[in-house]
Length: 270
Image 1: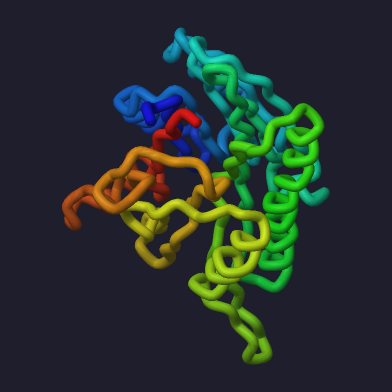
Image 2: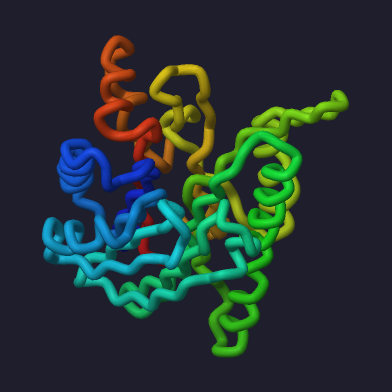
């Protein structure tokens, strides 16, 4: 099957400042030549006009988050898209931005894509918020399935992705959960329940703080089982950024661009 469209997902961490870093990020994004661009943690009023100017062949949409908790989505103009903000994926807290649902239309097929930024922490409260939002993202497939069955479509091409902050939980009473166990819960239980899977990435590690003290496997793509994707070696998601730099250059890259690497993937036609 041929490619339907390509997607970039990247947490740019306070995109507006400094200006030089924002310019470098724009240049890096342009080099990806993706059909869909999703950016997280930015200041919309400062970035929206700049992105429109730098990417003239795209239409842009943004969530209404607090401070820098916003998601910006760019869709190449040769793709039809219906965009809605999903407040149920903010859990009523300013610590999590609303989800952004983009239904991409390609050759008559619909691809509902839910973009999320679960800005969180390894606390019991943070774990609880992530757990709630992840469960909602999986269950959303049931709603989409029902809508599809009503019009006679047997399969929903559902994808949800983003900076999901899967970092486990530090519990004060000896009941901590590591990040691997948190991911395994979604892979072993919810994926099987909802006929979905997590795409394999070229690098598991996607985040490292600029000082190198914190790192994690935070950025993920979950998809309906029947969908297929371009392969990058054994992976279906190519991680690009500081992880692919020589070790002595990685810290400089994170400081110049973002402590998050960018993830890129290509969806095949159904």
